[in-house]
Image 1: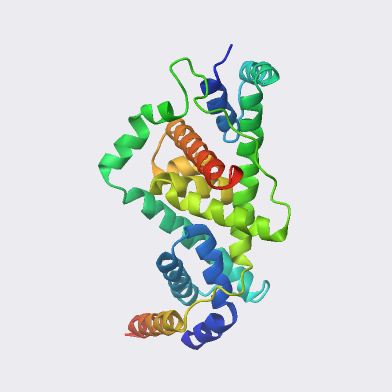
Image 2 (image 1 turned 60 degrees about the horizontal axis):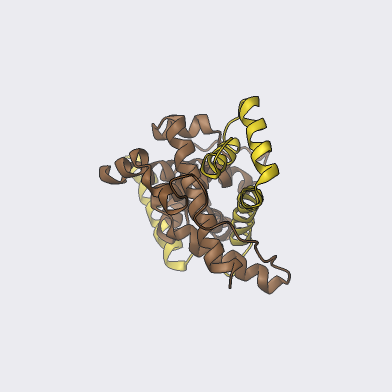
Length: 185
Length: 87
C-alpha cells in the first residue's frame, strides 16, 4: 500500500497541495493536509478505481481541510472569541450614530486586462490575510466552500446569529480593504 | 425605514439565510433611494465571485508545487505509519 503513496505524491501531490493552499492559505497547513490525506488513504483504502485516484484523493482532502479549519477556529484564544462574538463596536468604523455610511462605498475600477485581473486578485489575497484569523476561516468556509451555514455552526459550535454577524464583519472588512488597495489606486 | 447600517447587515445575511418577505421589501425600498448601499450590494456579491476566482487561480497555478522536502517527509511519515500498523 505504502508504495502507492509515492506514485500518488508524484502524480497528484502538486495538485492536492495547490487545492489545499487555495483554501487554507498557509503553506505548512497545506502540506499537513496533504500528509493527512495520504495517511487516511492508505489506512482505509476504499479506492476501487471507479473514479480517478485524483478525484478520490481530493474527496479525502476536502474533509481534511475542513477538519483543519475547524481546528484553526477552535484554537483561537478565548479573548478573541469574546471580542468577535460580543463586541458590536467594530461596525462603528463604518457607520455614524445615525447608521449612515461614514465613507460611502466608492465605484470600483473594473479589472480590464489580464494583468489588471492578476493585480486585483493579489490585492484580494493580501486583504484576505489581513482579516482576523477566525473571520477569514469562516469566510472561506462559507463563501468559497459554500458549506451550509447550519453545518458550519454545528461544526464550530457557534449560533447562527453569531455566524451571520461574523460573516458580515468579514465581508465589510474585505470590501473596505479592497477599496483602499484596489479601487482607488 | 432601514438605516444604511441595518441594510448592509441584512444584505450580508441574505447570502446566508432566506430573509423574511418584509425584510426583502425594506431592503428594496432602501436600495431604491440609496446609491451607496446599491454599490455595497453589488460589491459584496462581486467579492464572493472574486474569492472563488482567487481560489481557482491558485489551484491552476503550475508554478506552485509541493516541495521535494515535503514529499520525502510525507512519504516517510506514511511508511512509518503503515509499518507500525502491522506490528
